[in-house]
Length: 272
Image 1 (cartoon, rainbow, N blue to C red):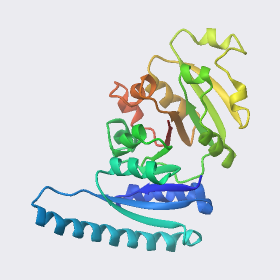
Image 2 (image 1 turned 30 degrees about the horizontal axis):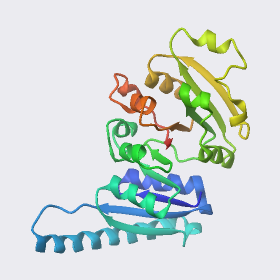
Image 3 (image 1 turned 60 degrees about the vertical axis):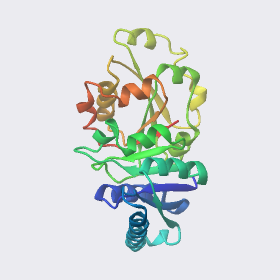
Image 4 (image 1 turned 90 degrees about the vertical axis):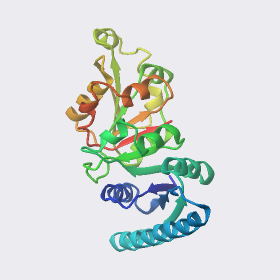
């Protein structure tokens, strides 16, 4: 991990996400505070004037935010850059991660419980689905602490193929955390999975470098199953692999159990 992008709109929750990143990664990485501003529709002359005003206001706020953060985290002095860009937030973030090679995006989510906005198509949700580097979304009620338990929710295809993001392995090792690998099987199939200790659902060699345990639970509803497991096991971070197909769309789609997921108050990190 070398460079982390921190989008901010200067809201309370954006500031909280920034502090979460600082607590997690400390001075071992470089940070870039990003503020985006969108151009309103107007005449050409007016647009030039408004663009200058918006850019100046954004830069001034970033400077003020930087001073506040350095005062609070003096050990990070010199490791925090600021960047003001014109454009739609998710488009700017996608462009910057591709052009400047950021290793991770850390951003806040908003809503009654934080996770709601991720589920219904917020900026965080769009960034998660379209940015190639890992994206860490921080709900407003999440505790600011280093994760001791990380839940990796994975579907059959990825589990059998042994798809295990290197970045996730690095995080688990970095924090000396315990990784709980969760696979939700359809109702009525749990006995068949558990009866074979060496079945292909347990590619232990893939996860051999970190402290981990496998967990198989029944459920035809991914949202409810993952929510319940996360709460019962008091996990600190939920990790998953995003795909253009089934798993991600099922989990973040408009499912009937969306309200249950709205009560998750742990950060979510998504890997492509």
